[in-house]
Structures are given as structure tokens and as C-alpha cells.
Length: 398
Picture 1 (cartoon, helix red, strand yellow):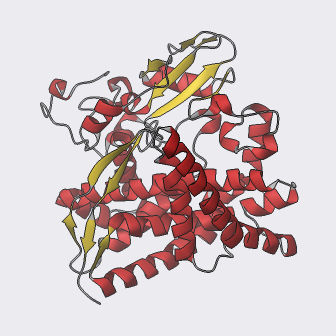
Picture 2 (picture 1 turned 120 degrees about the vertical axis):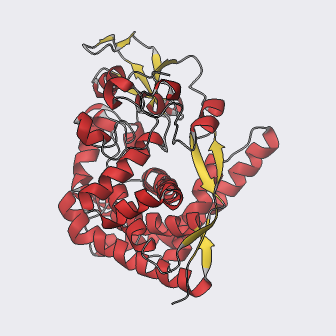
């Protein structure tokens, strides 16, 4: 590590991170890769045009058929073109004029459900928010119901990231995936595709229809958006809620602050608790940067986001302390490395921050809102990130 809680000159031994121990015990870089935790060097590597995606199964992807693989695995001009085509869906104006309405509507439904039931699993509520917003962006708006869509997407994504080793498990996994993906195709994606052919809209599915994507290509793209935009946001919302339930002063500051201050709080929590922990890159040619980046041709590096986010060279003193004023004091824009950097930086970063802000600002104003049980921290080895399950929130009835 580049910093230590014991070395904090202000609060000796303080560490506000909840996921540090489970991450340190389970974090597993790609075999043969070299770990880079220095913030400046990691950023240089991510921004270099000489590196390509690695890890997460990238070595098994057939790049000769870009129309049948997710944008996640593309690089260079093909990746830039794909990103540029949908960039407007993530623009601040679009968030304010279009996605915010979805967030407010979904939050109204979540509040009604919570007040009617009295209590509910927090990850189920955050999942509904994440799915509804991502569905609007992707174009999955012709399903029988939003709740049914959420359940079908969850079934596909959970099975894909929780697969177990062994021949029997592999066969069972394949059978489950065939059934679940087919159900998602017939009940969610295909109806949306047919609707876009009749009446195009501004969303990802319209782009895929207009560019003659195959069925496989459409499924890959939609599920990639699901994994990137739904699963990570679900965990982010629960993590931020957990910190604020635990810290009264932080929660009060959030509720009394303006939008900029609320974002500063969320981004600082995400700095300490990034949902994604590792990003892998392979160098096509030697990389030598001014900030310490050194990667040999064909070498794979594992960029440790958790470590980079507590690099005292960029955070200043007490890197493990949750300090919403840190970024402003250090003149850092955004949540450090938590959304990645370079060409593959998460395109939905601002969307995730906005929906998290709306969710928490609404929930924490409910009469009698309380955390009845804290979440369990689970490490998912497939995605090298944490999951939070078992948190239950309760409030007074309406």
C-alpha cells in the first residue's frame, strides 16, 4: 500500500473503509500480471493509446467480429465510434431533462413500497432504481413490467458472475444461462427491438437496430450495460447509505447540503469503497510515461484502484479517513480512480452519481427511516468486487 492508517498525523489508526479487509484477503490480479497502485502511473497507463483491454475474459474475445461483442472489449477507432454514438445519452442535459424524471418516478414507487411494507432489503430497492434508469438509457422499455425486467436481468447477471468451477457446475451454468438469456430476449429485448424498428428513439437499442446488430451482438451489449450500470450502482447506493446511517453528522451534512456538496460526499465514499477494484491492460508496444508508467510490450498490468485511491501523493494526509472536503482541498475533480480513466472511463459515471443522490436524498427524509440490519460484505471473485447483502431498512407507515 502507498499509505497507512497508523501514519495519519491527525487521527492515528483511523480507517473508515468497510471493505478493506475483505478486499485485501481476496483481491486476485490476473495470473502473470504486475500490480500498479501508484495513482499517477495508473492514470498514465489507462490514458495511453498503446494499451488494450485485458482480464475479464478479454483474451478469449474474437475481435474480428466487433458487431458481436460488447463495447467493453473494443479499443481504438471502433471503440471511440461506439462510445461517441451514445455519448449524448449520458450528457448532463440528458440526465436533467430525461433521466431525472425516471429517477423521481422510480423513487416514488420505491417509497410507496417501503411505506406499505414497513421494511425492505436495501439492495432490492437500489436494484430497482439502477435497473429502471439503465433500462431507459439502453431502451428496454417494452417489457411487461419494470419489476419483471429487473428480475430477469438479475437472474442473467447473477448467474454469469456467480458461476462455480467443475464440470457439473459448468454444464448446469450453461443450461441456466440458455434459459435465462432466452427469456430475457423474448420478453424484454425483442419487444424493444421491434418497437424501435417501428419508431426509433434516442437509446442504445435504436443505435443497434440502425446498425444491423445481430441477436448475439444485441444481447452482449445490453447485458454489458446491465453489468456495468446496474450491478455496480446497486452496491454503490447500499454502501453510501450504510456510511450515512452510521455517521449522523455526515447524513445531516448530506441532507442540508446543496447538490455539489452531496456529490462531494458520494465521491469521497466511492474513493474509499470503489465497487470495481482492478482494471487490467496489455501493452501493444512499450509504454513510458512522465509520471512513472512503465509497461513492456505484451506485458499485462493490474491497476489497483483501491490502492491508487489512497495514494497520499494525490489524497494528502489521512487517506483512509472519509473527508468530503478532501477533493476540493487537493484540487481533484471527481472520485479519483473509482470510475476508471482514459478511453474506457465509465460512461455512466454521472448517471450513477445522480441516481444515488436522488435515492438517498429521498430515502433519508422519510419519517422514521432506520437501518434494521447491516449488510454482509461478500467478495465476488468473478468481478473482483464486493457485494452487500442483508441490509434491511424500515420507516414509519404513510
